[in-house]
Length: 242
Image (cartoon, rainbow, N blue to C red; front, top):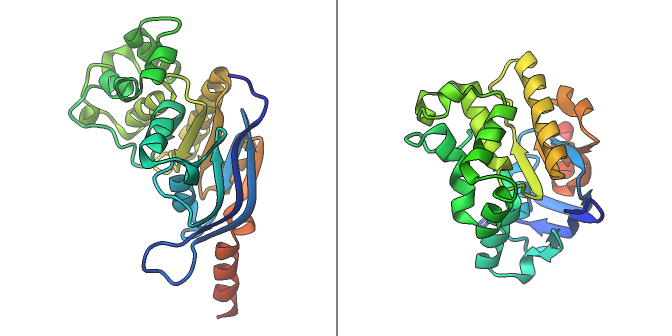
């Protein structure tokens, strides 16, 4: 994948949840370059999770343009958005969303079963299971744990499995939503470093979402949702006034 170009671009985007009078996202412009590592932060209610839903194509803006890897999300159907997400976006969720009954390594392999493109990329240099093992090794999960079910793993171990699952098949965008919230400060820094290194090796764009602004210095650019989202800015001003 070439690092030249734009991975994500938003232009005059408005999103309002059904039944809500006010928009929760009102973003005039936002652009993320291919290969860039971005720290996205903001208080609760500033629109972080909603924005991630738009980037992943789970939700569609009522107005404006959300372009992901050159595809305008409002212009393509739900099935095409699902394919784009499965093939090109790796998600690392705050609660990890692992299948508790599957082994660590089988959880990592799941994206390759959902996308043929992802599987082809994952197996370009080695067999699929070997690639999953490589990622788990790079993320410091001991081989003795690979066969254990996710339910048997500690929070830190589950986090590494979730990261390997997000990275397998070299997705062009990795979105990490509050992935370090359950870790102490030392483990937070170690994990951020591991994630940044793996994204750099895969030439992936990284969107790292957190409310912990101490982590911001480890990224190429910091974006405040309150600054770019006019809806969050208005809410903050109203809160200050009251």
